Image 1: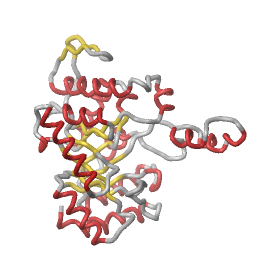
Image 2 (image 1 turned 90 degrees about the vertical axis):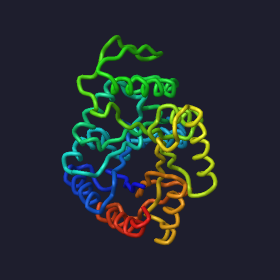
Image 3 (image 1 turned 135 degrees about the vertical axis):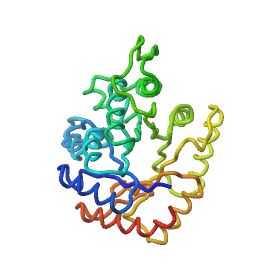
Image 4 (image 1 turned 30 degrees about the vertical axis):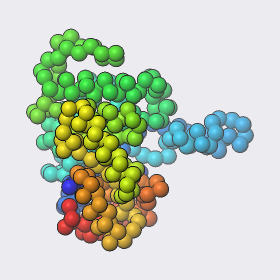
Length: 309
């Protein structure tokens, strides 16, 4: 089982020096990969205060849209930089909103990153929820699920062969191909999300699944079994599809962390991400905001569970 860590540039800073030092420190600690999120843009945070005057969206809607308050690097650009600063730690987008982008361009970018990193990159993707990003990028928000599924098939075809012919609802190519392909003929694609359609896409096309918002327990086990059943029905082997969950080094005791890691390992989870800022019913962020405080939490977490991985 691999142990990774999230990379919150909004907390630790966006500069090249702090990100290089952060990645190198985690590599030295023995972390297997870094996870970075993706947002191209957000709404004006002032909108959350305008509704009382009868102007703008409601507070709930504005928050759901996402705002410009939080910093995000483009994950592919970020990982290209960090791959040159490290030698063995892996990289995962968690998740890239694929439907906002041109599939062939993402396929080329991912192939370039695969080459530059020596195969250390896996492409986590999602359909997205932030409508304002789709508006700005000139992409239809309402067809994002169908388009994303076809994008995956198109990218996998581009990676697999020097030349391909592809005709779908959204993508067409006559005997063309990428000018640089991954040496293995593929870049691992991991799906994030909880919708039934996402589970079907995992089963048919995915190298892994990121069911982040689950605590150890029966609900998670039921989900895993549902995914494995769909994988078998798609004619594939469940052991060929990875599972990633998120844990919180910002809450709980070392004994609780060890208990949770043991649960996930016994459940067949292949990747565990120690996420230092995610907040949900089951997750809590670390109390500090500096790189040193994040690293201290991650150092303590890995030391407590390393023998169980």
